[in-house]
Image (cartoon, rainbow, N blue to C red; front, side):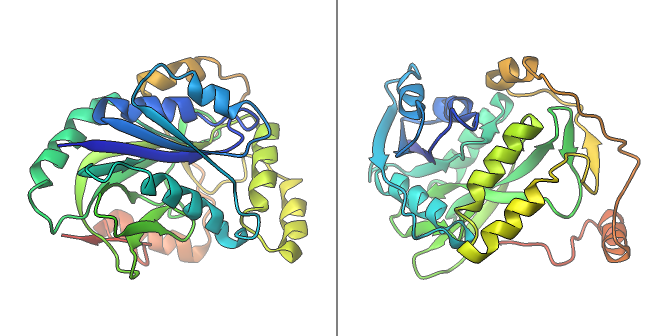
Amino acid sequence: MKVAGFSFIRNAVEFDYPIVEAITSVLPLCDEFVIAVGDSDDDTLALIKAIPSDKIRIIHTVWDQNARTGGRVLAQETDKALAAVSPDADWAFYIQGDEVLHEQYIPVVREAMQTYLPDKSVEGLLFKYLHFYGSYSYVGDSRRWYRNEIRVIRNTGNVVAYKDAQGFRTRDNRKLNVKPIDAYIYHYGWVKPPELQKNRLRYANYFWNTEENIAKAEARLEEFDYSHIDSLAHFTGTHPTVMQARVDRLNWPFTFDTSQKHYSPRVRFLTFIEKLTGWRVGEYKNYKKV
């Protein structure tokens, strides 16, 4: 069984993306790792080159400034990295620049890859998610956070990134048939000092909004505050070993009263139904479980 990892990155130094930790976290599962390094304004390329592994293969890319609306350029960059994966790889593990796989799940992922390798009906593996918010001590626990996403795909050449590259579909726009596995991706995109987070979001606006909507988005960012969140829960587990240095460097205060739930009446009712039955009404599912 051959496994390739793949990802993309741009301006990782300026916006403090944990891309080194992301790549390093999945390298034990990979025979190769393809990283598409975009035309950056900082030392991102040097950062990637400094990772001590001969498994990593860098491709140089230029981001399409005309593919901004809805984050489409992110899918384009993802597809560039996927296209560069060796064609004889059986599986391709996708990890984004603010995601990390905890080492405790490496055996789980490896076993799932081996188990489902002969079953061609399984086109991907579906992971659970923990979304850290504000600091490394809190995770989002409301309906606004997605609970699952595809991060391992069968390397058929018929799979492409979907919309903003949160997930994948076939080239003819069919949802992938996936197997859920008991492994989590740790998402750290919402853990940065407030001012740095504001700058990151301002930068991201240019790859999500049309020209006429950028000004509105900028105005909202002036009021960015981590405390403006509906619900959080305390994180009681351990962080991936590759993230521990970042966790130890935590240098901004953030506390949240987890007993407070800032829900609208509709969301409060839907949350009650979910806790009672486990069913999240209207949940986004860009996949088909098999």
